[in-house]
Every structure is written in C-alpha cells, then in structure tokens.
Image (tube, rainbow, N blue to C red; front, top):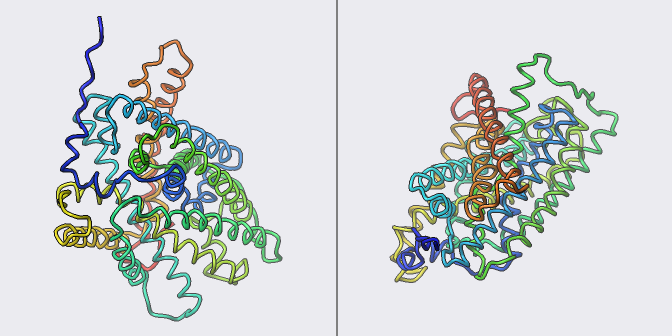
Length: 452
C-alpha cells in the first residue's frame, strides 16, 4: 500500500505575503557566503573563553571534549543540511528552523519550542556581543586613561548606538562582505593572542603554572559540566536552517562546502587559542584570556600594541556577530510588520524596520549593561539552548526523515548522541545556573566589572 503524500504545513505559496522570508532571508548566496555566515556564527571572541573552559577539565579531558564537540557538531550540521535538502527535493523548502522541526516531527508544539529556544539564544548572544564589545572599549580606555571616569555601561551605550546603525542592513545576504571580514578578523586576533600567550609564557614575568583541578570532588564535577556547556556554546549555531536559506536554490551540496570552510577556520583557531592560553595561565585562566594577559595588578604580559590590536579586531568582529544572531529576531518582526508588495526601501517598510530594530538593540544593550555575566551566561546558553538545537534535534530530524534501519550504525550513533547530550544538557544546565547564582553575590546592577 502506497504511503499517503506528506502535507507541507508551511507551503511556499504562503510565503507570498511573508516579508520575513522575502526580505530578511532572501535566497541569493553562494556556498562561500554560507561559509562566511557560519564562521561568524561559530568562530567568535568566545574562543578566548576556551582556556577558562579547560581549567574546569584539565588537559586530557579538555582536548577530548573540544574534539568530540567539533566532530559531533560538524556531523550534526551536515545531517541537518541533508534533511533540508531532502525536504527541498520533496517540494517543501524550509528556511526556518522552527518550520523544519514542526514539519518533520509533525508537532505544532515543536514549532513554538524551537522559536522560544532560538529567541533565547539569539537574544543572549546579542546581549553578550554588546557586553563584550563594551568591555573591549573599557579595556582600551583604562589603558589610555587609567584615572578616567567613564563606566562600563557608558561604553555599552556607545556600542549599542553603532549596532542600531548597522542593524539597518536589510537582509541576511547583505552581511556577506561583513562576515568575510569577520572571518579574517577571527584569524587575526587568534594569531595575536597565541603570540601574546607564547611571549607571556616564556618571559621572565611568566605566571606560575598550576593545572590542578578543584579539590572537592563535587566542585570538580560541577566545574566540568559548566566547562562542557561553555564549549557547547562556543561550537553552537542555532541558525543553520536560516543560513542555508540564504543560498540560491538548488542548495544541494553547497552547505557541506560551507561547513568545510567554517571548520577549517575552527581547527586553526580553537585549538591554538585553547592550548596557548591554558598553557600559560592554567587554573588561573580568566573567562577572557585578554584580561589574563592584561592583569589589573602589574604590567601587561605581552606588548601593548599586540594586545591593543587584538582588542580592536575583537571589537570589530563583535558587531558582525551581533548582526548575524539578530537576523532571526528581525525576520520574526518583519514577517508581519513589513509589506512584501512594496519595496524593501519603501517608506512603508523602512519606518517600521528602523523603529523595531532600534528597539531590539536598545533592549539588548540595556540588559548587557544591567547584567555583566559574560562567562556564566555563556554556560547557561550552551546548556539550555545550543545543546538541544545542535546536539539533539538534528539527529532526531535525520532519523525521522530518512528512517535508517534500527539495526544500522547510523541509527545507533544518532540515538547515542541524543542520549549522551540530553544528560550533558541537564547536568550542564544545573551546574551553569548554580554558578550563575553563586556569582550573583559578586556583582551589582550596572557594575563596571564583568563577573568571571
């Protein structure tokens, strides 16, 4: 008996009135553009947190977790691209994660779960990008004017103004050149930080090295799961369907090339930053390795110009990252607020876009200034957001779409990954939130110091 034809819950014809799809997620890109977008979404200043993640794991477990996360995420993103390609060949091209999950799993509830998680991730990263950019400006200012009166929240306000201006770039595809520059910036500051770390580790002022873990077994366990959550967040990319949507159809094979480009950059940057930073600072590694290289007490551990240039590169890339992760929020807002029958730059569409995107950036900037918890927020976002979207759902979507035999290796690899990372996500959520609560005693609202 023939199987009944699948019903597309989100047919293409319904997008005739969908300005979010027509404008923000316009499909014009080539595979290398997707590679640029992916690299900006994954390879960011969060890699400077890797030595901090290693301090909760040690050398052996740190290397293992970093490698496993890399292999699993590449595999996961590849499976998701195959599912998207399969749906397109079947006449059901999906350009949003939530639509893909709801269609394949046959659940309207999954639609809202994915949109909730995506919104939390994207907003969290938007807040984190503005916070870290403000901190970069503060670091430069404090070195140029040690007795200056400007506070962190004032630098965050400056960054927010720049983000408001840049956010008016209308489409995801229009970020392709910015994201190419972002890719080059990530290579640039990684090279500078690695060089600075080697210089610091071989100088006469080299800090004493201690790679021991916490003495209490329970503390070691919690720290390990927090570190795993941080690494998951660093590898995380909860917007792959939206990135794949920017490709000009047909998309077959294009995303794999984009992934290979992205993971080539990941291999170079992640391992070099993690090894060099942890080698120098061990269990004293800061949540931002640049702060370890520029201690509050004592001289800088590397040439000032090297660190200054690295901070400038980080600052510039943060604008690109903030823009990339804002695209889902923008397409959600413009799906209903814009009129697809009128021009992208018509007054009817320009005014709502200006107002809504400005309000969104002000919202992110306000929370960045109010809650300076960069390292801890990273762990919570990884455990609660990225692990479900990047380590669990893609395997489930693949098994549901292609229905590999239960006796096949692929089926059991996917099931094993889902089970393992469900457990890691639960433990990581608990340990990350626990650390966030413990650190709450160390800060005040609108503090001028970012809590590690």
